[in-house]
Length: 275
Length: 321
Image 1 (spheres, rainbow over the protein chains, first blue to last red):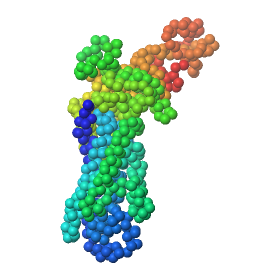
Image 2 (cartoon, rainbow over the protein chains, first blue to last red):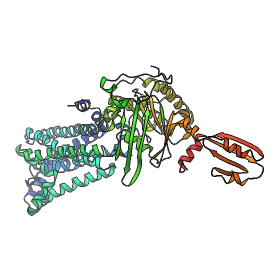
Image 3 (cartoon, rainbow over the protein chains, first blue to last red):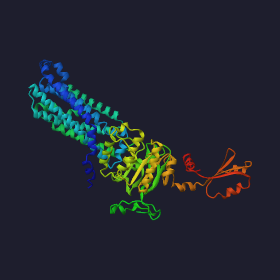
Image 4 (cartoon, rainbow over the protein chains, first blue to last red):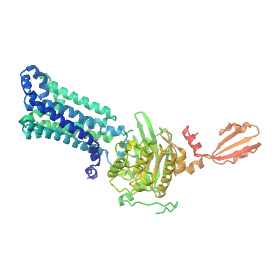
């Protein structure tokens, strides 16, 4: 068996370069999310009573119910965190940012023609895909867990009750969600040779999936349409509240990641690199 | 080591036993073929870019790949490097099929792309570090190269001029001492002074035994530095010769000024009248034509070799009549 590709990949040179390239973005978004988490969680005491009143109104529940992961809880601290921080900023906004960056990762090399020089080195196409994928992982790990520590700190400062193991699980559970996003974005980035096109496509896809999931919670008849949405498989609320992780959800997210990666490799291996 | 046939000095890098005895490595003349292209065809959708071309590049030569823009030069190179999949035919580098061994082959191949794009956000030094880590080998030539082609390595590549970027392209292609360097119009963007420097550098590299594949649409530079040339037009390889041979085979250009314009001469197939001169293009022996001319009063006569330029123009404009 030929282990040379594994040996080459294990040197992680393209992956390290990817990390370096995204370092600035990683720092900026880490600070941004840390700031956002601080801001939103520290709002809770002021809104506590208002939210409790709103929760009694069924109309409000109908409107926001879709964003609470079906729990209907947005008045408790966990419900508030879930709605304000996780459902919107984490799943959607951070998802968009990750997808936006990941979707340019190969297409920008093709568009700017640097792929020509890169491929003149003894690196295989498989290696480029795998290392680019690996190189994007530190970004999500850093943003994700830094935000976790901020939530932890703010919670202590506010004196609210939150199971910190559940908090950790919630962020751990976010990893397969973001991995699946990276893998799909990478695939799009290989299919399209223009980085703007691939990024915009990914944003549209993610927003589309988010709304499908949202609608599926509002309309009982349309319950199943949420199944096609990646966001359906990451449910921060139940993890945060009860420490439950949807194993099927994790399996689906990991499968999506692997399938998207395999298709990326197969497709890229056959692709003509034109500049 | 020294070649017995041509007294050419070069070096030989010892290969593993298996590689050294691979059949395709040596041809009958004893020259090792570095690049072999066999009936290569590549089309994009319905456009035929390269049509069934075959040629070899021998060890230690500078092979010129000449043709107008859009003739198929870049496509051929991109197939050789494994960027494009050929529709038909195959190619070997160091006797290894590019289809299965391209990553291995690239360890020993330098490349200067036609449209050179560097990582603009890196400094020169960062770029070289990145690439040397990808090559995963020593860079024995880097210092020499940086001396010849000076560059501000601590500045970001986006601040470089076109000429500086091109220099970086040259440096990265040669720095790890590859056995063969494939260049796609490498002198584009170099100022005349730098061009001369580059030609001199290539000649030095040739002396060291490096094989070079040099694509160009500029005839004079191919004439100046290449040993053999393949001319490609509309995807077809229309000539494949040593430069000397190419000139020799095309015969001579004879211009005469005669008293009057005798029909017998002006109506000849290979003759045309320009400003009172009758111009003939001959192939092979010139004696019959001279005998014919001698029947008339010759006011003036010029006999010229074809320049490569003339030959080239004929190939370009439709070529072989």
